[in-house]
Length: 199
Image 1 (cartoon, rainbow, N blue to C red):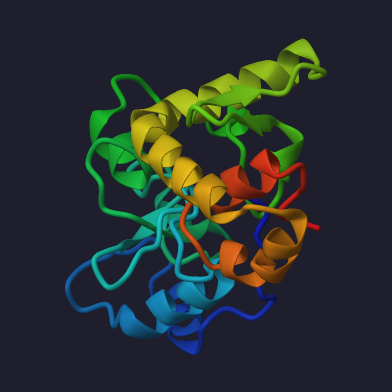
Image 2: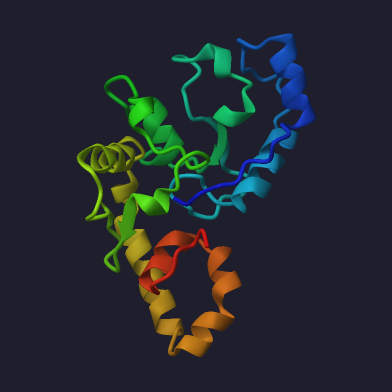
């Protein structure tokens, strides 16, 4: 998870829907393609939460669930593109959460810089930074749990190991920065090499 710059202007189709029927429904009649493309451009074709590369099999994710906040159904600032893994990210939050989602205690990657909250370890773990206040630490832990980000630990670990094997020296690393930004789990990779992805 890393900081995302949301474009100020919402896709035209989303603006139209917001004006015509702000409370939904979000149904099969919604022309999703324009919205998906705008979100993929914003996120670099990665899941907003786990950062896996997401193609056409992803889905438009409502950060605040429609059931909880129907007034945000077509709100541009409430939408992300998420992978469709039922065991993590948006699907896990929406389908597996056993209690109300603590929205005020979640990191929103367009408002909070996740790199201020998380350390990414070579074994694939994501942990709260050591210097956080107790409320910041709770926000980091709640975000990890709500999106079940630890469920991808082994996949992250394997990906990190492959990149470490490729990077024999600092020169090779510098030459690969843009490729790293475009890769899955890019924030974890940048942290492992002692850099912030959001720089």
